[in-house]
Image 1: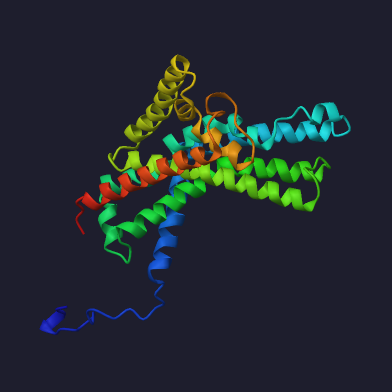
Image 2: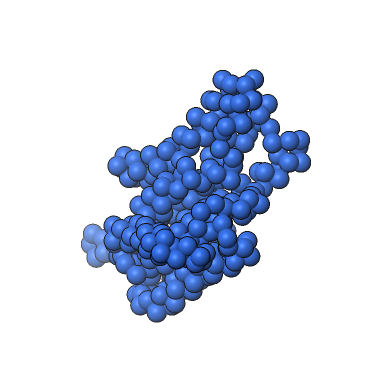
Length: 292
């Protein structure tokens, strides 16, 4: 820096080595995971960004809150409490909320990174394409589990506190594990589908519309084909794959088009869909050109 009278002083010593703590790749994955959850839920953003995910999550908890209220008011009436839906049937009450969350909140985790060039900055860090996708997938999975697992666990805990139990401590713990397992597999199914579709566009609106189209078009086509060929059990499974995975996790045979499909076939098809979507996402990101 040139001072008065032609004198000069060195005010900057140039590059200095970073001496602080280095978190490594694991810390980078956790940071991206947490930031992605915040973005998906609209945290640290405008009120409008928070409105839709908050509304969808609230709607998914409404049936559980209603059921808990029924148990509290009529816990001495076995006719009322036994008429409540079982835990294996609860997915039917929140299926629309799951689809809406996957369509309108989850794409916000991936699409902006492609549009704004943040993907290149992420890959310039300790993250590579695989660890980046792992961080993003776990964030979407965590958000979806708020809808698929949270309401049922609330119902289970509140019902147990009201004396409406599924048995002793052992059966209650087993039911909790089944709730988590069923919610996890459904969340994984929609996470893989969301990522596979979002990988092909940088517009979250397009991704959301495509997710809704795929889900409902698959159900509509499957239902039409199954009506024409009632014996085609696998076609019926396409109509209700998430519900079939949920009921089989609880050890219950689902009704409808997938009733004649074996449990092994349900899991093979479900895991096959998850694996296929995962491979599509990985191939797409492997071929994606980014600037660092």
